[in-house]
Length: 460
Image (cartoon, rainbow, N blue to C red):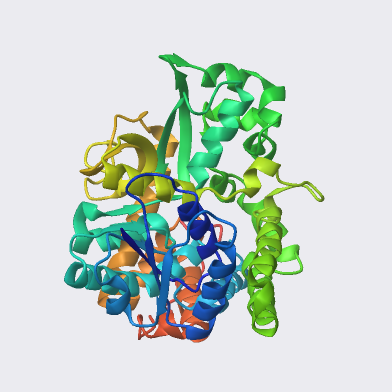
């Protein structure tokens, strides 16, 4: 079978390639096409993969091209992992927000809206080319913001595009370990949106082990989430949140930590990856060795702003995870071997209170027919309200990106729960348009700033 990676010059491509090399299934990927708009980065990754395959029992037929249709031709699966605007765009996603006094983060908050605005049109174009060139292919989306982009692509490809993320997998694995149960035998009652979900149950043979885990403060402190949120807050919620909910529950602390650091996450990665690509160009014979070292440093520093000074990530959390999810998904669809995975799929009736067409992140049954959401733990109260508000922002962002409407873009920023003022929303749009050409090409006009008169405390 053939897999095409759109964004094939990206730093994380060797993770997928490594998983494919270790696949021993009967129906497996033997052709890998890399597509990227940057031919230089594409060549660096091609060299890295060639060295990675040495010593394995088999090698894939790897091709690299800047021609999208050529890469897609005869593909069985397409893996979308693009970054419109590159890491420079990500640094601006973060800095423009921080300068406006709000959270500066890649996928959560205004940075995620800015990222979505410039990415949706490109992702939809990719979906249209898949439909034209490889209509039988399944698309696996890892492009962030994953829920929003998957939903935009589904307007073209329907249920043949499925979003993946490694965060729920890691959360479930850590919770199972803390509860002293086998994660392979557990069912994770995870429900929500991408980067906005909660583990509501942890079941083995019909017995839910989550209540006992939540009651055990020491066991919780043995997990990254327990240390991140604190046992008392997890007990108050009655659930374990995805780590990205730190930005909602501890917004001030996150903004203060990111603002006070020597560099944002995007600035760190821009520097690190620039040095990696430059080093491989200077010494191509060490491409894979250099990648391994850079990747480990990247994983060790992930979400460092949410950890105490000097606190290190657990060894088991340095292994990524999304590549394993992608491989299991492809195996289930290609071989018809049923499995269960937490995926980003069309809601239907899985989460009452969210639109049917909304893409949600829930446990799914997967086989040759694709992925179908199962019965979920209900969201209610504050959890449902937060999910509804963020999903409404997703949909506004998609509409703004496809129409080029500055009015809708401002509304998307203003209605996000991490943006505290309509005036700030306008400042954000102006700032992003000024600093990110890819976004300015999508939203071509700004909205006049009609600041309302300030009211005194005595004004009725």
